[in-house]
Each structure stands twice: as structure tokens, then as C-alpha cells.
Length: 226
Image (cartoon, rainbow, N blue to C red):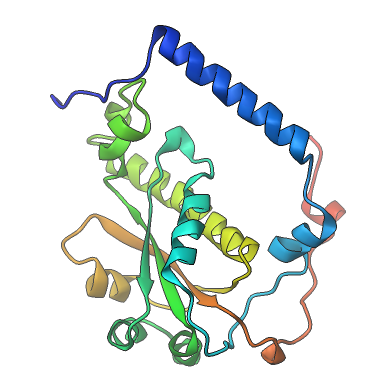
């Protein structure tokens, strides 16, 4: 591989950037030590998956902020393999409906938007930009299984970040796995290195369609100390 790795800061420039990073974290911790209960409830504890929606569009600038927050979440070696395809037009929704199980079609068609959360198998080609201080491309070049595992794992993390970021900004979400990845990939990603992971409807929910929240496993059932 002959492509040069992007220039990374060194010496005094690197020390300055590190000092700024340290100061930013100290300032953040001084301003807020943790979320309050309302904030935790909003993003996870009492948040719900929604399947009915108000007729209220989501502005594009809100989606851009959601992506900005999502992209800030950690991934292995800052690989950032997730790709987000927003399906909003009737034409695009009709194409997507080909892949959905019947019970999910109305949920998707009625939502203001649906995002295909995918991952790029060639994510590693972006590492000179994303991880400039060391060339990590040889870890993945010619190793498709390792690249696919890394892309899927970290793309899934980014999908979860997306859902939490959307809730944090006042939107509601409803993730879906009741569809054919094969059909989605053929319909939207043919001839590319992208592969679909899961779908997520988003918008402003109609809460009157909700049932009671289902139980979760208690700590002692799900957790062990080793």
C-alpha cells in the first residue's frame, strides 16, 4: 500500500492538543458530574420503542446534530464504520417496504423517517484520516472476516448511539430487525461495500399506541462478578 498516512501533529503541537483535551474533560466534569434522573429517564430508563407517529416532520438540521453526537461516540481505533441512510420520500419508503415483514410496513410508512443503519466493509480505508498517528490499515487489508466483524460490532455501537442521541434531542425511535438484510442491500447498496445492520424509525411518537413496558432481567440474573 503506497497511500501516505495523513499528517499527525507532533512535538509542541501534539502537547498543546493533549493539554486542551485534558482541560476540556476537567471543565466538563466541573460543570456536570452526571445526568439527573429526568435525563436518564429520557434516554433509557423509561424511554420506549415507538411504532405510531404524529404527522410532524423532523428538520434536517436536527438529524445533522444527531449524527454529530453519534459520531462522537467511541469505536475501536476510531474506525467509525457506520453509515446512515435516511429514508423519507414515499418512493424510497416504497423501495424499503419490499424488504419488510408485513407487520412492519405500516410502522415504517407512517413514520416521518426511517434510517438504514449500515456499515462499510472498507471502513479501514478512511483510517489515515480517522487514526492519523499510526497506519492501522494493514490490520484489515486482505482480512475480510476481521474487517467485517469490526465493522459490524462498531457499526452496531454507533446505531445505539444514534438512538440515544435522538432521544436526547427530544425525538422518539423505534428500531426494527423484522426485515431482509439481503433485499435492503440489493435495493440500496448494490455494487458497494455497504451492508445493512438494522432499521430505525424516528420522529415524534403517538404515545397512545403504547402498551405497558415489558420486564427486564434483574441485576443478579444478568450480572456476575468474576
